[in-house]
Amino acid sequence: MTTLSERISQSAFDGSRLRVVLLLDLHDGAQNQFLEAYEHLRNQVASVPGHISDQLCQSIENPSQWLITSEWESAPPFLAWVNSEEHVETVQPLHSCVRDTRSLRFSVLRETGKTVTSAEELKGRLQASPRLGDGVVRHALTFTVKPGTEKKVAKILSGYTSPSARVDEHTRLRRTSLFMHGNRVVRAIEVQGDLLAALRHVAKQPEVREVEEAINPYLEQDRDLNDPNSARVFFTRAALPAVHHVAGDGQYSAELTRHALYYPAKEGCGMALARLLAKQDEAAAQSPDSPIASSTIFQRDDIVVRLVDMTGKLETQPALALGMSGPRKAATLARLLAVGEEGVPETDKEMARFLKHSAMELITDRNAPPES
Image (tube, rainbow, N blue to C red; front, side, top):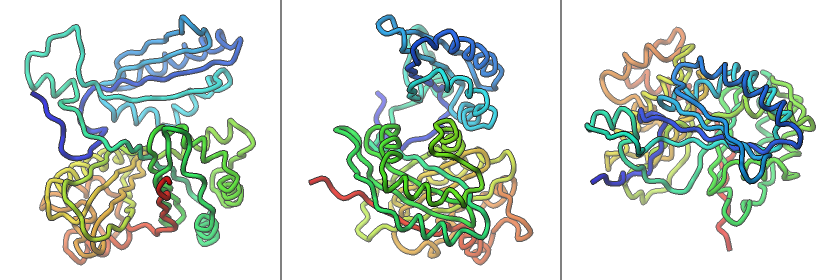
């Protein structure tokens, strides 16, 4: 009998097949235009490595409602495709047809119609066992600002008024953490309930809109928040999805502190680097003595950010804090990190130096107040 994992865990790296569900609500009269755009998109997706199949469905109750489902060998090839610049350009023709969209992604746990004969076959095709969740969706946005404007941007981003945490009956903002590394901004959010509803809620709040308008002149990528297409493209490119999250089993009596670490991946190595860090964090979560209570890895292309909540100071155990514990980790990381002339850290002194360089500056970290 399969048992639940005892740890809170989510991961794109379990090797199971992925089912993607895209719900669409079309503008009236846009069906034929949408079909033409979909045919082009379908032909593009069919050639993407890791793609298995897709289906286009139309509601029998409301012809404006459509459904696209696709199946992938695993999550990593889908994430590589959906986060690519090619995907951003390919789906552009669909936007003028669609009033609203919602994307859902699922690991395949069980299926009918085929008898699984061995544990090895189950492991290779399906999610081996259900994971234990905490009802929280984790997501991040990242973008860069013009060099030399970092202090101005940090001041603007740290001074905003928090929007209402309550989105609707089922959705609530829990925490927003904002970090900078050089001219790169990373905003990590935690949502109880519907992520898309929360993002739309936040975007409409006047205090948030004021801050977004204030940093517009400093962004390296131009955007016009009054132009829906410009805003959509910007936030699509800024999306930094969580590919792995794990929380340990230990009870932490000491206060936890939040840190973010930026890992410079070599070109084309971002996914492999995120996978390596995920393995390390899974192993660390099994240790009752680990100071790390939870970790979340965000990855898009070669941008890899690791968010950790831990007891004690970050520099106390630099190797563990970096996710580099173990004699073989340095050699593996050498193939994945773009570390420059200093090379891959191996000694404690080198680890401490690399940790200092990787640590992102905390701009603001806000927990939503408890509901009365």
